[in-house]
Length: 248
Image 1: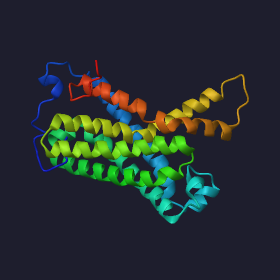
Image 2: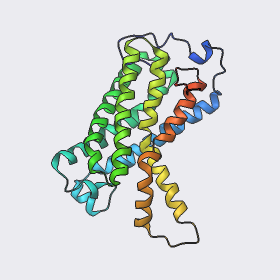
Image 3: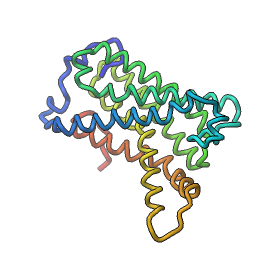
Image 4: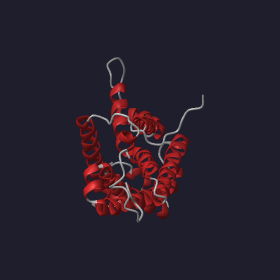
């Protein structure tokens, strides 16, 4: 993966191969990448397109997404929300392309430019998320959960950029995996909400959608990204990339 002006990526050997570790099965790798691509595109369309077609006030009246929470907020919060939605959507669409080995090896120039676009989108969306965090609809849990997500999103993106500028391809790949795990929180947030709504709808109790949704949404500010990072770190170790070792 390359974001800077260096072109060492295409010729660099896969870390897993250079260290004698078996690479993940090709079929499983393709299936995982295809899932990431399709689910990211689906959420980008689902979460972004409505905000490009109508005002927050109109969307709030129709009960679309988080429009009701941000409609009526100060102008800079509404602006940050719209910027976050659009830039986050760009990151979701472009992000999976960074892990397409064919693009890296056959079209390194395209890979570099899409990488730049991805990291710029992450930086813009992350800063906007920090502005939005105090006004989120999940209270203090949302402030700390989504706020920490935004900080780590920006920090991992900067680490990925610094690594490739230094020519450290392996570290760059690891940091990009961590970063996209945080980008993918936009997908897992919605998956977790669906799971938590389903659990509350199980037979044996009353189910009221709005109350159940509030309960579910109160859990996702941390749940949407911490498991993602754990999975990313496992994949990083499996591929023989630079990882964090737990103290013994």
